[in-house]
Image 1 (tube, rainbow, N blue to C red):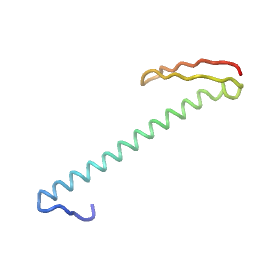
Image 2: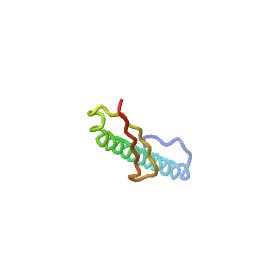
Image 3: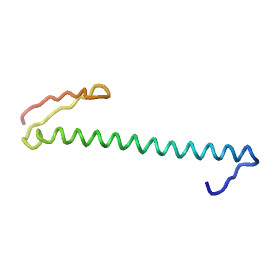
Image 4: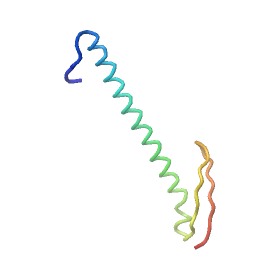
Length: 75
């Protein structure tokens, strides 16, 4: 919060609220992206044995938790 361009005490209050909203939004997006990349890494580690064996697979994700269906086929 370097400079406040809003006028008066109400402007000071709005500036503080908007700055804190921006901070919390960045914090939330960082946590969300961390969760997404963590789940992608977990999925990659789960499917690595199939890739090393030369199998192809089709992944269908249903839901937020561990509802993962694999359909394997040989090339």
